[in-house]
Image (cartoon, rainbow, N blue to C red; front, side, top):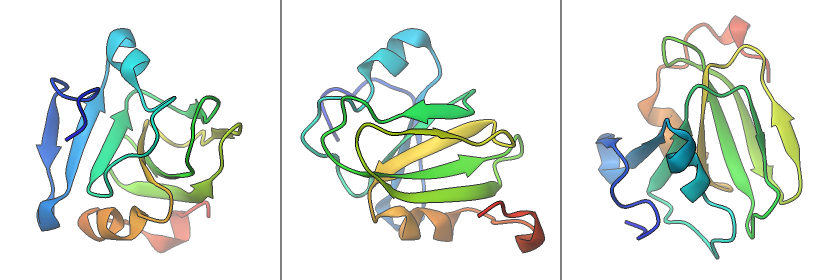
Length: 118
């Protein structure tokens, strides 16, 4: 794992994937900004969250937006640094290395495809 994210609560997903949770202001402050990269098998969940920015990022992110039940409602792929994204239907977002959302999505129930905002 990454030293900056050590100590955050988290959960294991199938396939060796791990989600760490930033649910407090202090935990969010640790975040991903100014990191050179992040492990491909790690995601950072921000909750509650409907908007994120990528200012201070050094690499693109895939943003997996989840509703209150943990279902995927939208995915923004390869969001470059210095951008702002919002998903009003989301209650949290999982940030993963750009281009790396596929394995994480395989672990989530996408729910009703007609509800996807993509």
